[in-house]
Amino acid sequence: MSLSGIPWNHFDPLNHFPPRQDSTPGFYPQYLSSSAFFGHALPQLSSVLYAESPAYFNMNALSAEEMERFQKLSNEFEAELPGPLVSPKQSSNTVALEYANSDPTFATKTSALAVTHPFMRIMKGDGNCGWRAIAFGYFESLLNLRNPLQVHQEHERIKSLNVLLQQVGQEEHIYGIFVEATEEIFTQISEAIQRGVRDDQFLVDAFNDEYNSSAILCHFRFLTSAWMRLNPHRYQAFLSLPVDQYCASRIDPTKTEIDEVGLQALVDGVIDASGFAVEILYLDRSEGTAVTPHQLTQSRPTAATIRLLYRPGHYDLLYQPEPTVNMEPVVNYQYAMTSNYPAWDQGTLPFDVGSISMSIPNLMVDPSFGGLGASPMPADPSSPFRVSSPQEMYPQPPMSTPPPPMPVASPPPPPPRMSAPPPPMSSLPPRSTDGPQIRLNPLVMKPNLSHSLPVTTPFKNSPYNQAHFQNQDFEPIHWAPHESRK
Amino acid sequence: MSQKRIAKELAELVESPPEGIKVELADESDLYQWNVYMEGPEGSPFQNGKFLVKLKLPTEYPFKPPAVSFGTKIYHPNVTNDDKGSMCLGMLRPDEWKPSSKIAAVLQFARQLLVEPMPDDAVEGRIAEQYKNDRARYDELAKEWTRKYATA
Image (cartoon, rainbow over all chains, first blue to last red; front, side, top):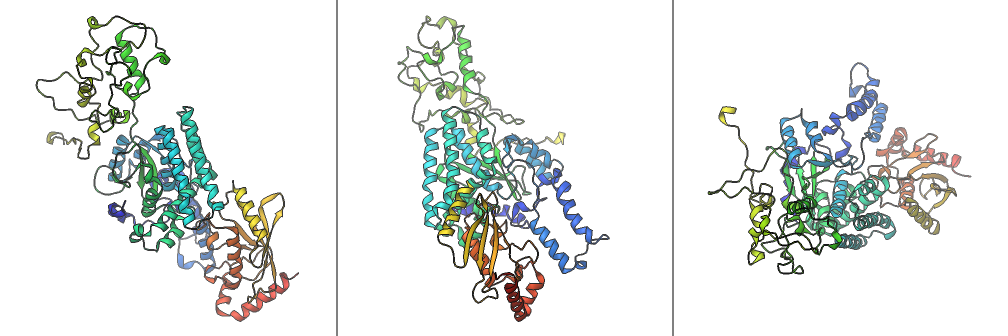
């Protein structure tokens, strides 16, 4: 995609921040609120500076030798940064708390953020945070989709990018060890999916291993650098240096934080072909009550979105609410309603309990209805009856802002419910010993099942259906204080 | 993992050493400490000298740069005039280091520095001043030190 969509105005106010972003402790409040800045960095610096001139600090009073010594100390200064390279998933309330007493714009935006994106991972601000956020987000998305074929395809795709490295003259024995580290992650993800491991701790651990983590990020840097050198026309207009020099000074060296052009190139060259979306949410002093989102990938249907929180000089990962309604309780609910049948053995069920159709609570399968072989669910995703993925159907409602009430039509329809009412007892067919004890609700017993799927009716107006959030034109109703309440 | 790359680079350097440079492990059991014997480049005041350069690789190599120091005393603006003889310049700075840089390039860079010192990046300010303002005297002293310390 082109860079023209980048909201440069968001960067302008930040231009006074030095280019090597992460090496400027104190510019983002993580330091201000923790003891890292005041407790460590300042005393060290000030003891150096003030020792020579106890009364007050005066640059001119310093001899050339002293200046040299300070320059050396300053060059070698490295803030001791607390925390792991990639943190566990944690509540983004912590960010809201950090900013609670700061600039009102930040306070408003961060408390709104904690609602729309309740979880985050903090990246260590060691000069690699942007690179690390993207790389970790990429592998985490791949793991969460739990599609072994996709993992395999992505593994092959990333491996095939070695061609770019060869084209810019990198030697195999130099980049080989970096590619190996990346491949190892793909292998671990494949194995985790095959073994049904739900815990992503292995991925967090891999990214917290200094050597491993450096190797993967280095691989991504190499790919980005090669991609930019091979596609200079896409980036040159945004750079003040020739692309080669830019890559040599801003992409290739370890510990140089990614800037907006580099980030775009990383997304274009490495991430984009995965089909994942990458979105940055800018937390800055611009007007508004919410962080400013910017999509780095073209808008398209996507299985996963890597979301970055950008604060001046730092990137972290953000997560939207996780779906909390999972399919099993729903199935059990259905079962419990029907009556006290003997426990199911999933193995004997003639359908896949894990399949997505089972997440639709009142989709009932009657063995007498059309045979079990024929799936009542349209398979074509483009069909108007496409079954939304659980993520689309059941996002957790935002914590403090319930969905706006739907206008009630007249005569009012029965209140939307997660499940259809239990079938009248009189309509129960005789119990059979084989097959599931699930019957089709008579309310949906219509000649053409595919046109009477219960998905459409109860869900469309359900307060739990948040499909309207997918609509680009959707705007939530904002609560405005009434005159009398002001 | 770092050992694989170091072993490979060492093998390359032993097999086809760059001009005026010979490398060996300081201790056969430690891949991370190298002794480099560097001939003073022709046309420089260090000509005919043979300098021991110590190369120390961090365990995080290639993600962190190697450290280069002169084991032989040398009169040079970019080498500290103490018992450490350390040299820290350009590509060897932690924030400029690129994992794609090879040790061979580092050593060639160090040898080139003997031909063309970088007085603006000096660690010995006095020698740098002299190099810029009184080249003859600099050359003289550098030759003298070479004769005194760098010829066996």
